[in-house]
Amino acid sequence: PMSQILTVVGQIATVPRFHRSANGTEFCSFRLASTDRRFDREENKWVDADTNWYTIHLFRRLAAHARESFAKGERVMVKGRLRIRQWENEEKSGTSV
Image 1 (tube, rainbow, N blue to C red):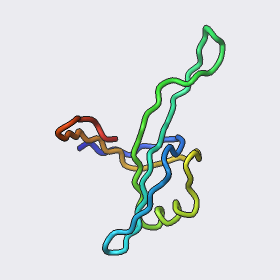
Image 2 (cartoon, rainbow, N blue to C red):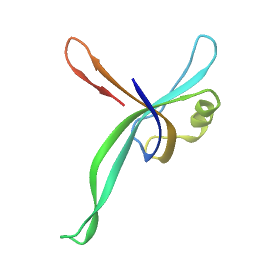
Image 3 (spheres, rainbow, N blue to C red):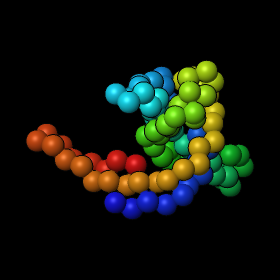
Image 4 (spheres, helix red, strand yellow):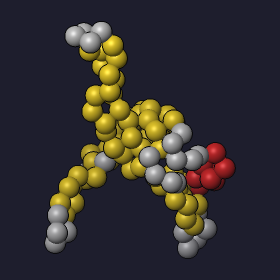
């Protein structure tokens, strides 16, 4: 799998889910929607372009902070490792980002 450092600004699109592993490590996950904006010269205004979707995973202290601070709909800046993976099951296949 590919792994790069990336910074993304977007909106928390799902209710953050919090879990604790068997050894006590806290973690959090949510989907992040990041929509590009572009200037439409014909309409002379900024318009939404494509939306990229990311699954965000937070661990330990950052996950504990997220529990107190993050909610669906909030705008956040996320910096971390980007991993792109292909997946498939009996019904369908796709790409996980």
